[in-house]
Structures are given as C-alpha cells and as structure tokens.
Length: 141
Image 1 (cartoon, one colour):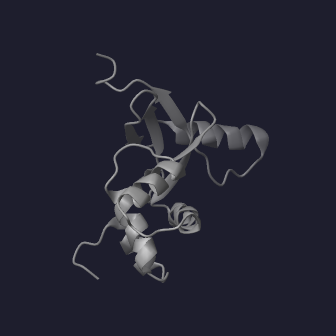
Image 2: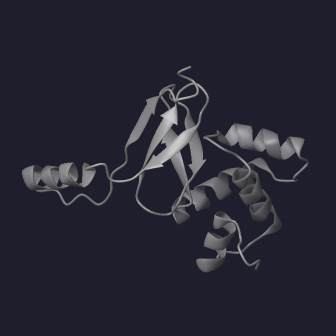
Image 3: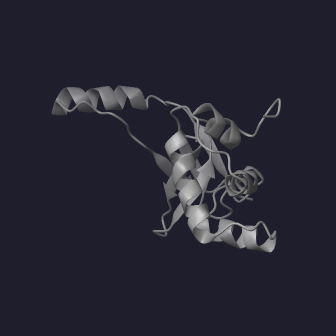
C-alpha cells in the first residue's frame, strides 16, 4: 500500500476486497478522468491504453466502487447512465449537460425537506439522491 493510495484503491483495501491487477487498472483509469463518463467510454479508454481489462471486469468494478461509495451512478437527461468519482460522504451532483463537468454539493437545506417528507408521509427515508443539470460557467460563455 502506498502512502496516499487513490481513493478507490484505498476503499478496496479498507473494506477487505481483493486488489487485483484489473481492478487497480480500472481504478487508475477512473482516477485520471474528470467529469462523468459511461462504462462504454471507460472500456474504450482501457482498450486504447492496452490496459488488458475486460468488459465484465469494468462493469463489476464500477458496481463495486459504487457500492463502496467512491463512485456514483448518474442518470443523465438523455436516459444514459454515467458514473462520476466522488467522496464517500452524502452529497448531490451538479452536472454540465454540455461538457460533462461535475461538482459535488452538500445538503443545501435538503435535509429539512427530507424531514418534512418523513413527517407528512410516515416514511422513514433511508436515502435520497439529487442530480441537477445545467451549463457550467465555462459552457455559458
């Protein structure tokens, strides 16, 4: 283990998952990206880099990293699914619908809305997710 392992590798090690070569390569490919990406884009990048990572490994790794909380699946307005690397704390995403740049935002008062929804419905809300789409400052120019 290195002094400061990438967050995905660190998450695997902390939770006792095997750190295989293909998982490490997928983690490094994700770590080198900014903004959201699709599984197909990641697979294409792996092939271009001759990373020797198969399709099944990419999909299983994405699922595992999402389960560990260091990657989040986004439902894009186009209906596609994309992924974005993130911190393993509760947050929401703002996604640029033109360039794919993402930003993480914390509560923004949403916990008040969640509490009110619980009070009005009697549900105990276990989790929620908010994705906001628009144009980032650079794409607005």
